[in-house]
Length: 362
Image (cartoon, rainbow, N blue to C red):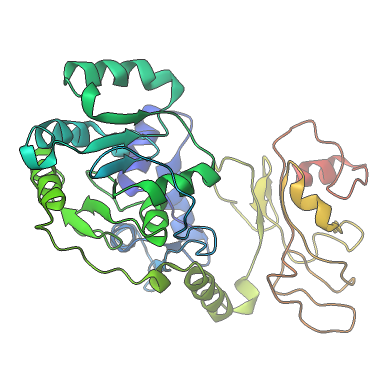
């Protein structure tokens, strides 16, 4: 189980939005899953407090695709010296209130007056509020960009064109934007204790303002981050090593809905489309054989090649007809997530004749 969300955000989200229960569901998974993983040391220390097993939560290294996120000549032309970029998710713990207060104070200093702040990924429904916020701060003059979501290709150009990425978070750990920016050669300012940041400071607006001025003046030394440490291959290695360390009998594949509500109560039981599938629950006839074109299908599909009847798509390993083990990434256990509740055919186009087959695909 990937304990992905910030623990504080899981608690806050559950208290505000019922019946979604990210915190309660996570606590249940901490006790039910064979292994729990997270990418952030601070998350691990918190989730470990809830663990009843000695091994605790497994820490795997975070990483990004260094072939995609890389320095290059094709970059956005961003105003400002420095051009400060903010392109977070604008969730509750990542809203830029402190950053905007800090920028309003910093840009009034002579040594930081040429800076510009570029704001991206602003939710459409919140733009009017944030525009008013900036107006009342008298900050419009120092805003270089004020825009919504951008596709990855444009985001890469924004990273390359920025002089500094600021990733505010009053608690938690930094997000993927820090790794992506660093991989593109852009320094990052994040809260104290952040692992992937060129500059860090305590996250109150006055300290942020002073740090921005220091960075603009060149008086704050940047921490050197080795680009190779950001490679997602490390994530893959950690996951693979963890998987092979698990007892073979405990390895299972879960078919989950698009939004996780709760873990399976017992192996072999389907809970509204979310549950563990016991060994042999699928026959080879039921195993979908997908061509490469299926990768572009609306459903998220990780598919195996044609396999023999001895194969257990949800068991410990995949075996080809000659008895050899099929290893990832070429052959993976089938995991299907279908958004549409009206889906009536399997990914290979075969009509699902029984209610059980339809429920399983869903």
